[in-house]
Length: 395
Image 1: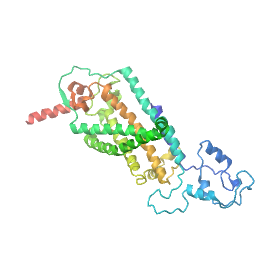
Image 2: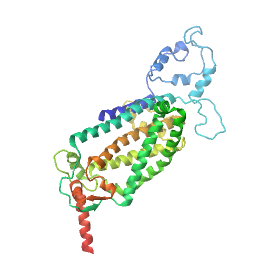
Image 3: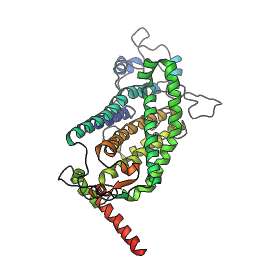
Image 4: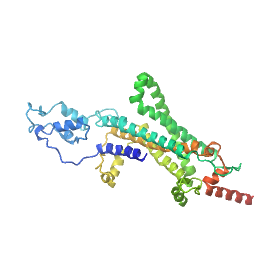
């Protein structure tokens, strides 16, 4: 699983490196008057990164170029390639009456890189991560089995979550599942669903999936805000988390380590949902309002200032991003973080259903068996009993 995660983010690093500004010594192109050489063409055909700065700066002066009869020889000082070069590298004087951030961009230079990464590493490592997590959970279940209630049931229950808390949880869970399914339809459509269903069949599904995805996203963002305010005070780290982690939640060392209302594992789930879900929401808003909420140029600029890309060998990241490039980065980040959160949530679903006896009751009825609570959240039970005793004395 760790190898899959590392490979996943390594692919993203390689993708970012392709957009970084390379500082290599310039290649000698005097024989072509500054135009691309055969080596440039061969490297591009092999999918290698080629610095296109020499192409964007070529101004049509061909006095030093090779003769027109030679290979790659210049054909004159001004030609149609000059126009297309200016359009490609956004240096053409384009005017339009359309008031739109992307209206003057006629050629988007990094479009094919986005398609290749989306259909290649993103799909491969994203689904590999999810399937790897499922495989680990199946293996864990076969080895460990279901975590049972060790002691004798008391027949008494303790209120663990109120109805409004359970509503926020199920709103988050339901919306996330819907967003995941509809997002997969969008991601896999061109590669798998169109060949299987045909363009017309996929069109109907894609239109419905897009509508669901765009509108259910608001429920997801609302649920994140609700659970943050409901549970943040119970998910702040404390000393009990260290002991819980050292014992692996009871897997190592035997017995159930003491825990408050949320143990260290649940706190990890909580902060994963808040941080990763917040990042998904931010990139999702950028996609919901195309070209209006650019995020990555400013982010890359901050990263360059702190020297983080240089520290990991990426060089300075390109901060001059076309509006379409911004949207493509937003879509990739949206999908990558969603895959990571989906893998984490699968583990959470396992523990809350077949993995642990009595765990589902917490979000089902809200009432949990007292013996279960004492085994898994003993410190929290003591707090509840103390409050009940105090309330009884006051009465």
